[in-house]
Image (cartoon, rainbow, N blue to C red; front, side):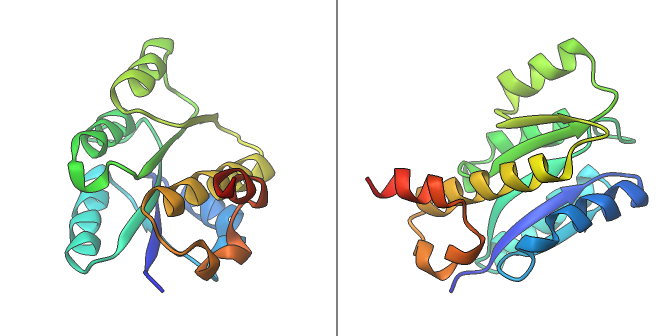
Length: 157
């Protein structure tokens, strides 16, 4: 079974803890990593990729020191190693233009405003990771207990 990772990025530890708690149902199947800056996340992604691991999903806050979440997700979108990686912007302070930039330049799949609904975040994560598994050609059966059943059925048609 291939190692598949979800990376959560926020400069506020209490927000990271809340996201990790919400994603806990996926932690038995996927590795969930947390980073407190965009640069830390990019470094981790380089290390995981070098080790042959996959990054299925990056969930990032927008307002962070030095590099914003939109800048981080845009950089990931431009990196051919991570062309299948799904991206979510989770923020309470993005402007309308930030959101448009995230959609157009970072190719985000979902946007959540803080405070978010835990069930909506976990549902979105399941769906996005399921699409990643199929797009990468991984054996979905290895991860089936954590995947979105409807997406699996749709992709098997």
